[in-house]
Image (cartoon, rainbow, N blue to C red; front, side, top):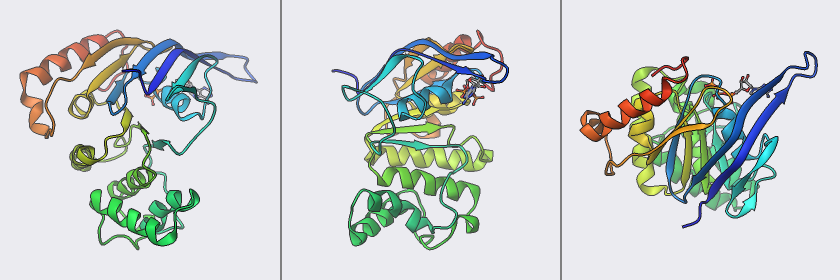
Length: 259
Ligand SMILES: Nc1ncnc2c1ncn2[C@@H]1O[C@H](COP(=O)(O)OP(=O)(O)OP(=O)(O)O)[C@@H](O)[C@H]1O
């Protein structure tokens, strides 16, 4: 089966116009992701994980190499490739429902249909009853649910998630991991999920990709052979622990990691 997403020799350099310093974030990175796969990316701080997502989103074009999506080179953003950031980026002046309706309306869906879609997605993320709340009236975890719902409402073929639970307290994080596992049972799109948390990567992913320290290259690519539906109880299983050991070993090449 051909990959839905393919990073083909992707390098990315950022040049500082004042100091003339060049930072190489990614170095000839190759990675293929099959349709419907949930791939988690871990790696040392600053190794280029966000840059990888931005390249797939079409926000930051590679300096050399190409990102392919569904057989075409990515040249810019598109609603079929949705992004969820760490800080629950939602429009503060719109209610939860309006935030989630926004994408479908922009794409030309009728108001009634968009409303129904938004209500369905908000229910899936556990926010029924909060449709008319503004982001400031919601907790951090609830705002992040709105951000996830907003992306899901666009029915993206590829969902790019950049440490979506990184800013949440430990308990909320566990709740949202569980929520994402449940959402996963109905949303069968492809997911590229960046995290610092090795347990989270193995719990959620079909595959865990470990990047080296900057410039990021793939140092381990491992299948998570644990049946779904999953709950956090899989963290006790031998397969989980074996993968965790291997991921940690791979990470030891780079130091700054919260594993
Ligand atoms: N727009 C930019 N301009 C200049 N340098 C950048 C830019 N974006 C990223 N970088 C640099 O590229 C490197 C990789 O950054 P990136 O954010 O992709 O890493 P990361 O692995 O996501 O980091 P973290 O785990 O800390 O979030 C870093 O050194 C960063 O400072």
